[in-house]
Length: 569
Image (tube, rainbow, N blue to C red; front, top):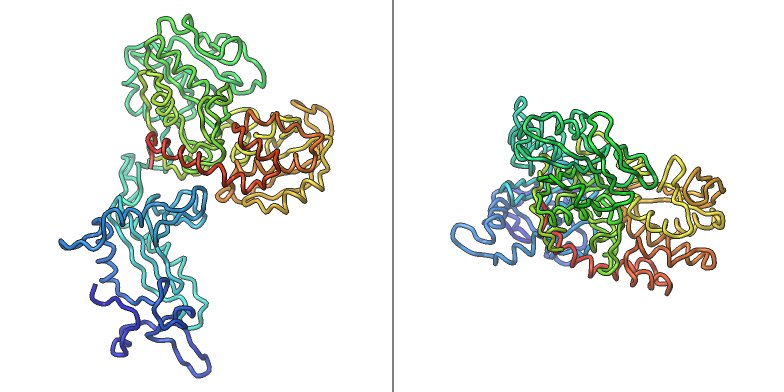
């Protein structure tokens, strides 16, 4: 690097872009001196500002980092140093992610550039400069521009984004006809319309070959459809060389509409038996599995620990292992992203139908990844096959996948409600309504004994990122407090990127216990909170923000465990 230094000499002034006017009347430009006022006052040399360089020199720097700290046979930085610089070093849950000296392109950064792959790293300067590096593709982008010339009011953000988009475009189109192509700047494969291909779509593309010549049982519900809207049931039932012999349904039944126990029955279109796994039995029995060679799981999950579909999957894996039959998971997106992990980790000894594995409230995994984790960590030993998705990125919210929204269960009627679910649902074990029996479940919370104005004002004063609260009154048509007027709050999602939904749940529970200690049944929330320590901290009156900090240790341990089973970038 030949042209990189603090305090350049006057002879280099003609090569340096001026910044803004020091005095607009006199026309004096700041030229060849650091623009940052703090660095200027300290003599022009500082850790955060004052360095002058060229695109050529910065290209050498970028290539040195991409080479692990060496360039042209000379080692400048240790490989471990580069790794520490360019992987997240921020405390768990802190946004944006930062390494040592770099911002990390994180799946939940609100300012994430649209085409930056997760794992890339970048640095931007106040005057408009930017340097962006993708260690996967080896591509780097350097932007040396000057938004503050001459009056200090420019905006380089749109230019930076357009440059990245131009580079992505130059690397190749998203598709060529109907052929899937890989674009270096992005991880994964994308179809012609950008739609994610779920497990059943990938299986169809393989002409269902992995299931040929075997008798299978399908665990599914209304969410088990392919990209054309056709049911997985029909795809498998009508396929040559495949014998679909039985269907199994989870909580809410095959149609996803029941809110109580479901009986076994026959499937109308095929006449096949539908064995309910939310009735007399929660697990497939030996009799149900007789004659089957494999079980296939195709159900849309909601991304929360206490969503029972993943427990049904775990129970079915155990039953399949016991009978020596294979288990296939047709993977689907985590609707609230597979990148954000939040909340207290469930105590190991609290396993139940709403808590199959010690996960945090929001686990950030797909069902295929969970199946891999369950099988290995619980020593289930089933012959597991995960049919991975194509075109899926962990950062994707469901409405970014190109897939049609289908309510995964009767009371999750929108992505907004699903985002709120892993937090608001923590309270529903107690004597409060979370809006079941209304048109907006999990967007409402109340009880006859709550003062709506008081609770709303208290929660708003807590300044919980991503949500606001408004006083509300509602009368549920079902569930707890059926036909009783409830007073409480409407929960308004303002920024899903910054919301910590699990922390929201603890804030709500703590508020109810603080304001209404004689009415609110705190102990009944333990099952969904999942942590005795967290419950005791609420009882002791700890600030919810302190409680959240206290669960970061176990959460970090889970993140380390989780990393072994992630299937997507």
